[in-house]
Length: 140
Image 1 (tube, helix red, strand yellow):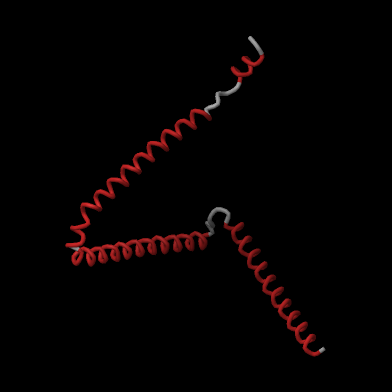
Image 2 (cartoon, one colour):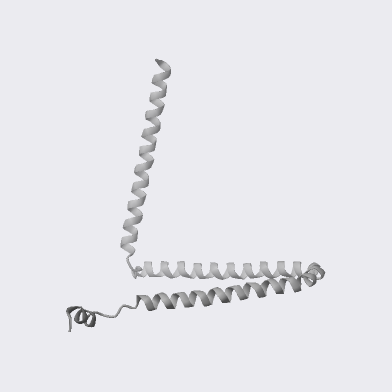
């Protein structure tokens, strides 16, 4: 047995080519399905267009009511989940059960705030410097 054959037997198999073939096959299948779906949608719209035009005085307000009510329910649900999350966070903070890495987040927040304060002070100093320079140039 040659050294190359021993090396090939001892190394783990490389599945890169198999992964590439599987991804290509899956991609081609999904591309085919999407093209069939697109063609079906276009055909459906062509057939349904006359009905949409005839029934539009009924369908447009119904669609508006459906969209607005769905948006309202989604917003209220999201607000409720956000409120519950805030209350749960506050409860854990009061009890001393801080979330994971809360001290690191507080440290990062304080550091960002101090950098923002430093930048504000630098901007003030820069503005005063430019203003003094401008006054010196107008006086000279």
